[in-house]
Length: 236
Image 1 (cartoon, one colour):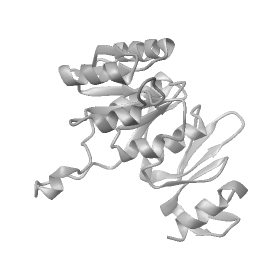
Image 2 (cartoon, rainbow, N blue to C red):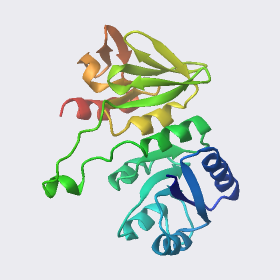
Image 3 (cartoon, one colour):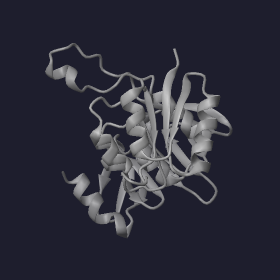
Image 4 (cartoon, rainbow, N blue to C red):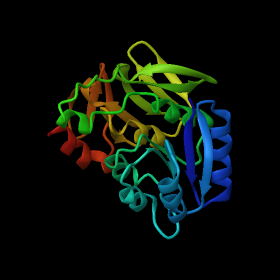
């Protein structure tokens, strides 16, 4: 069964790219493309919608305000050119947050999450039995292949001159993702940006100071602009 999708995007080129991606994805069926939130509101109220691909910076009403108006919210994948809306978006239970320009490999990762069990919401308060989600992983594009990497195996992520490497205890995976994109993707999980070049798994930190952390025997620097946030986060 295909998931019925609506694209809410005021930039024609961005909407065209998303429509192309949806068309390449067998599990998705594009039903509407809306140029603003007011039009999208009418579509959602009058038609069955399973997934919204939602821009934030929209005319008339922004994407977050639009989500707050919905009584029954479908699954939502945010598509935005800005990092700063990520936390507020996840607070509204979006499935994923994609930063423009969006590569197809990253798009497919987000779509894959639509098949994963939704997190515990109303069910627990109703006494409904809840099945815990399986061990968390993502398929990351590495050397033109989608490689499954379990999040609990990641030690840290390092930005190098020509690649961003996902480092596990056994292997380092070079990718072409942007550091900010991975930071946004992993924000709800166990990861902390400590430096412009390093994103670390908090539960892998062996010790820390105001200047550095140690992960699996390697000393990683804490950036000057990140120091205050890192200390606050690790001293909780």
